[in-house]
Image (cartoon, rainbow, N blue to C red; front, side, top):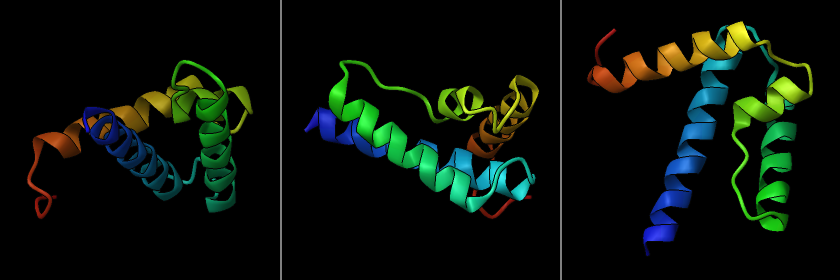
Length: 85
């Protein structure tokens, strides 16, 4: 069960990361979809998890600075109630 919860958290994180990156105009929905598909494929064939930001960086779709901006927004969102702006 713990592995299932970890997987759920990782999937939720990847989607939230992607949503923010799309809202900021860093990537398209199609790029996110491709990166998520690659992440799932990689996870099934390797022993370790590959972060969505890592995949987007490798593909040249995001820069390290853009990833940092998205991560900062993710952290801020975790510190605030969902309804707060």
